Length: 100
Length: 496
Image: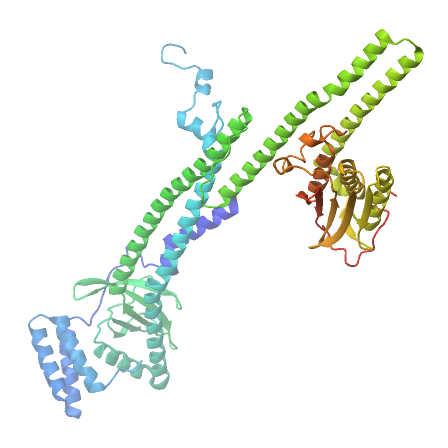
């Protein structure tokens, strides 16, 4: 293998190591882990309040009431993520599919 | 400084580690066998090709699976960002904030990441507390460690800059995808390890196969070089390239064997058949020297001895002629010519000789008979056949010479009404110095048919001897080397 080919191979290998597969820069291990704020009891309350506000403007289907009650119960019992999931489903029904 | 255990500079310079010497061949009186071995090279090529193929396949599979997952995530993020951008353009900051809030509120999969900050990186909306360090470029992908409800995860995010100095971060949680990707990567790496192991094992097998096959040929060649000409390279029966090589070598050995047998036979025949006329000439000269009563008697004895010696010279000339023909050098003189006048000329020549014994010689040939080859040699071959036919024909008999085009070539036939050749002697009639039992009383050296045989072989043709019942039919088949359809014929042939 001549010198140029060897250098090219090493450069490719090095970029692989530095960037990871497909060249995505890795925010290194020194970066602090970011907290997601939508998996907290406070966010659970926020969703409940929003649901109540929307229910005041139009009647809520049975599913929505059921989901919101269940979500609140779960959040109260410390099952935050599961509770938030149910509240989000209720919001989806009330608001319709989110525009992407 | 000297002493026990202390090496001098020359001693240190002469010593090398054993492995180093084996790898470089330095300081060793054996050649660098490993790297020079053809079997090692073949095996290495096989191993490298297999490993590269496996690596290429693994890369392709990785790209199609884990890569596809990443591409899907990126497409979803881009579409999401496009929607937010349209909301920003339609309703400005308040619309964008409400949209982000709505999307988070409906994110049942709990995998969305949004963050909207102002020019001073103060949080306005979204589900991250602050702008992450290191995310500085737009149109670039980042993988961000995040924590959801105490569980550490990984998100793929991209930055978008908005008018007014606002910055938007959109992303997706890829923990599950990352786990799948890790699983795939591990599987691919293990697969690569297995491929490398298989490649190494395969390389050893290839090397062994290569060495065994070549060893077979090498041992046979060594035995032949040592003098055992009966050895032949064994065939595996698979009909592959190695078998073809072995067959070619065996064919070559057969030919060498036949040639050496021919040489041995000629040497024996020369010793046997030429000893008689040489002895006869010597006896006559000796007798003349001892008992000749007059100059006339002495002169007659000398002339008879000269005739005997001329016969011996003619035999040697014929042998040399046959050797020249068999060497194949006359092929360069091949040309296209008309065989019809050659048949007519030879027929006319021998008709005059045959007339003395009331033998009729007839020639049956078309007006033009194109042929390709050495005109002089073909003429001599026909003359030899005609000479034999006239010699062995009974008085008042008939000899027929015919020529015809057949199957793209030429067929020349000479038939006589003589005693013919017994069936058990037909196969040997073309050998040098062969004389049948019925022919021993007839003058000749036994080289005529051998020369015709050599001429036929030189032209890629054959000499066939058939029982004409009665007599012998000698058929000379000459293939046409080059098409002669539109070429002018040269009746004179080369050299005239």
